[in-house]
Length: 180
Image (cartoon, rainbow, N blue to C red; front, side):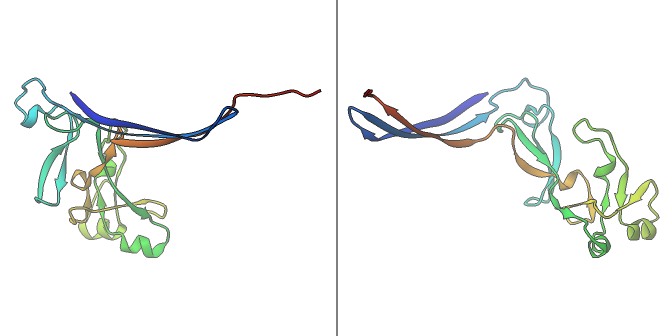
């Protein structure tokens, strides 16, 4: 693993005299973690773990996530929500077969496959439950009217690439007097 990055701190003394110091500060960082070398295992880039997702740019399935030589560690892939089915209009317009709902995702228990009642009837689908009000609408990235592993996309990383923060201003009084 190779970790490269930059960290920067800035501080400014707004006021500094013998009685009072007022200082403000901020910092920012950027890091990138690249997997350099993995044991040979016969997989492309000696990939360990990961999953296949559809790449709209090439129209092909590609391996992502897991550990792969030359790739960043900690990338997260998943489904993108297009909102919630809130009313009868949404329900009638969302005609998808959700195969992913019936599969195990990231160690969770498998549920039931879901489809619109229209598609269950038209296609004679068995072992599916119908989409209901309150269900999630998932984005169909490959536009095949089926929600499955091909509709997963990069959601982000477990390790942020960059961050910025500021500290609250500090005020220090260096002398005091008491009068009685």
